[in-house]
Image (cartoon, rainbow, N blue to C red; front, side, top):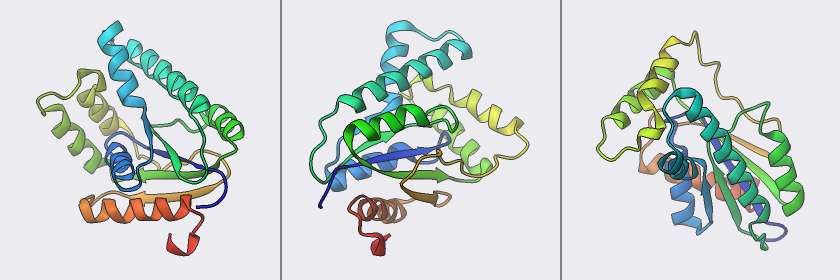
Length: 194
């Protein structure tokens, strides 16, 4: 790979497969991954989150920590740094633009989506898993999704760069590998492979 390292932003609603894709990129490409949920889990364990408002404040703090880490992460030639989280369009663009500028990176944004009913089912399944961190509030998130009129489809961040929008309805190992391959091709500036 030639030129500056890419910044790969994996985003989407809860339960779209963001963590699975980030883990696949780490395994397949050896790229470092900064995960918003890993930061939030540590904050919840330390500070607690008694209600949805406290959980949202810790989510906001988690993004700030993630952005601070990304700004100072060493940028090498080629390769990529992966940021994974449910980034908020209209809110997180300034911080990500600053990271791109400081790192002199090119952006590959991956927006994952699936139908609302599939997301609700995944969230309910997760909530029942032993060891699932309670800070995720999966059941509350599922109920909020059910109350929504329509999910409006994937919402990319308003940032320049390569945009990949991927449906994860039938996410399995083969589909995950195909998405990871497309991301790697985009990060390497090989658009003919995307």
